[in-house]
Image (cartoon, rainbow over the protein chains, first blue to last red):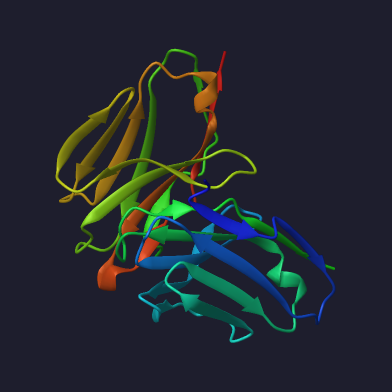
Length: 112
Length: 110
């Protein structure tokens, strides 16, 4: 069984659309994260959730909103997509905040 | 100043040599240090973590930490072509925030 899974793997959409990326972990971890990796491979944290509470919210546009229905899921919703949102988005989880993180396979988002 | 800095490379070493990857960090309060490997088109995977000053060995990999110099390194002995990847240094900084470096691209030449 995949420890951290994301869907979809690829997402191609037009500017201005709204889209969601789903993430699930079956490791029983308390903390989940969303990262954005740009074309230069820089991995930047966007959000983390610990026991369903937002712990870190970096300077991310409010078009991005994390939603956690339960401890095992952290979905990422993006409104009014822009060209600059094109990147690979990784979900990750860890037993506790700032512990070793386990990454999902990534979602490659392309905004046309 | 970036929280975590790495030489972007590319770093090329011949097969069988020792590859040395370096990382510096800015937050003196950092407690945990991690090395991740990322193959092209794949997600980062943990290689090693280190909390205490000194060396930590795991197979062909050795992590070295010097908190006084705010420096952490990864040595890969007997480098193999399969080690060719981008290596990401990550640090647990102030407020339990997690910072990644920009990564060092390593190529092992057969």
